[in-house]
Structures are given as C-alpha cells and as structure tokens.
Length: 468
Image (spheres, one colour):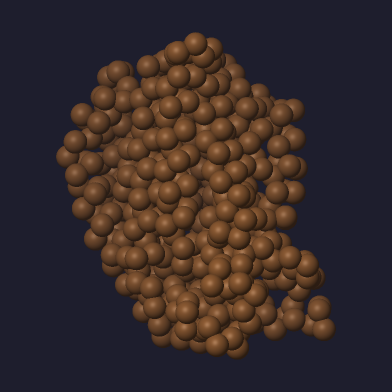
C-alpha cells in the first residue's frame, strides 16, 4: 500500500493495525532527531571555526544575524507547534486524512507568513541589527547577514512545517537524511564562499548567510518533491483541507507558541544587549559557547520531539496514562544523556574554544560560560523535554508563561541588576542559573498536575461548531 493510499484511509479502516505508531519507543523516535540536530551543531561549530578566522567582529555578527533571523521566525515556529500537536493527535487516532489536511493548511499559512516576514529584513536590516548595541563594524556585518538570509524564508518554512508533520507522524528518519544532505551543502558552501576558494567570490560573513540559505533551499526542495510525489508518510490534504475550524484550532494552539518564541527572542536579545555592554569579546564568547554546548542541547531537543510525538499520539489514542508515562521516560533519558555530554565538553572546554577562535579573552570567557551551563544541564533537560511534551498535548500557553517568568523576569532581571552593580560579565552569564531553576520547577509542576491532558479536547469542542 502506498503512502498516498494510506492517507485516504478513514479512522474505521481495516488497515488501522498497519500503523500502530503509538507503540514506537522513545529512543526509536529520538535518535534520528538527535542525530539530525547533532549534525547541525557540528556544522555550526565548523562554520564558527571558518568565520572565526575573520575575527571576533565576524563571530559577533553571525551570532547576531542568527538570533535576529530566528526571532523573526517566531510565527513560523508557532505554526510548527500547532502542526505537531494536531498531526500527532490525528495520527494516534488513526485519522490519517486529518493529519494530511492539517499539514496542508499549515504549509500554506506558513509560506504566506514567511513572505511577509521577509519584507522588514530586506528594507531595514541595519536598523534591526542595531538593537544589540554593538559597534558599527559588527552591526553592518550582521545587517548583511540578515538581509541575505531573509531571502530564503520560504525554504526555511518548508523545512520546518513538513519536518514537523513527519516527526509528529513518527517518521524521524526522513528529516534525518534530508538534514544530512543540507548540512553537507552548508559546510561546503561556507568553506568556499567565506574565503573565496575554487573560483568563488570571497564574501566573508555574507558568504555564511548564503551558505545557510542555500542549504535550507536544498532541503525545502527535497521535502516538496517527496510531499507532492506521494513519497512522504503524511500525504497531501487536497480539497477540503482549509476549513474555518481547522484554521482556528491551528491558530488557537499555535499562537501561544508564537508569542513564546517572540518573548524568548526579545528576552534573549535583551540579555545579549546587556552582555554587549562589556564589549565584543564577551559577546563573541557567548556565541561560541552556545555553539559548543549545542552538542548537548540537541539531545534535549531530540527527546523533546520524541516526547511531544508520543504524548500527542497517546492522547489521540485515548491513553492518557501512556502519554504521561512517555513524557517522564523521555525526561529521564534526556537528563542522563545531557549531563554526560556536558561533562565531556566541560573537561575539554579550553581546547575546543581555542580551536574555534584565536583570541585569549574570548577563549577565557567561553570556558567560564561552558562551566556555568554545564551545571544547569538537568534543568535544561526539564525545560526542553517537558516543554515539548506540553506543546505536543496542545498545552502551549503554560510554556509561554514559564518563558516570560524565567527568561524575561529572572534572567534579564538579574543580569540588569548585575550590570547596575558593575559586576564582572561572569555574573551576567550566571543569571542563566536562576532562569533555568524557575522554568524547570514550573514545567515539572504543570506536567505532574496532568491538567494538560484536557487542553486539546476543550479547544476541539470550542471550534467544532464553525464547520457545522
């Protein structure tokens, strides 16, 4: 039976047992996502190494450019969160046609939003980059990065939505091999475009932006080919996909995640703005440190995806206890894995940092940052995993609240106090500890309460009347 045929099955089809996706294990779902994100992290480290040869200004510019780019993609991430929750639940209920229709609606909305988001980046890139308060040189470099990256917004949208739909349906392997292809393209292009090798122009930081964007484009085209040729697990929704209730429910579940991403990015920008008070070296150290530790972070993201998928699918199948059990199991695996990886990274922090950039002050501060972040890996595992599980259940509002309290209230608040007290920049980095302590406590309490199990049903009842 082809995947196209599979999509046309109704909930009552005899072929229901052909796809018992809720039975998939956490590790079976998590490892392809972990490997995919690990590849992105390794490529990111290689990119920092290549860009780092241009100096601290270039590293600061790329850090700023990436942060602004993802801040402007907050709405796309919201749509992705709604896609994950709705597709996972439909798949758990064995309603494959509904999963296809949700994916189709999500894709059209996301692509339209991507076009709108492109406009301010093309018109006001310097003004946007200026919010960090960096010196003029890194700000102009960051503006160029933002300008050229924004040209690939739709490609980013395709990767995000179709990847989210596949993972929600239990297929984490297809995004993995597409990720391998895009990462190969990315690292090759970064290598040749930044320094102008093999006849290519020497583009510096702009070359890194083009490399990232073209890699997204390659991945997006592969996803589109598989999607419209019927080779994806989740099929094309076709006529009847766009209904008022479906769009409203997608927006209802997704918009808190979008606000959360926006709040997160604003809080992050405010935090980096405070770091920038201390100069380019501390700012660059933060960017290098995050890139190194991303090897540990991606493990948390992988278990977050697995937890979200299994929670959504189990709820769709009517197994609330199985949903809760999946979330806790994903959490313990995430904690163990992230702690072990962070210990290894901390042991070799100076050697890794010095490999990436030849600047004594940046290296010193990077090591300090890594030590601090290594301490909070269990707390980060809670945020990543249980936050993902709540979103998979459609409970996107509570993670928004935790972000507002933890990041904006605690992290930025403490950092601002430390700046006013004229304390060293190491204290600013340490504000992260308070942030993650608060968020981990709030998310663990929410998941333990099991109130998240009723959120989706309430929204479903609320919007069903629009198509009646």
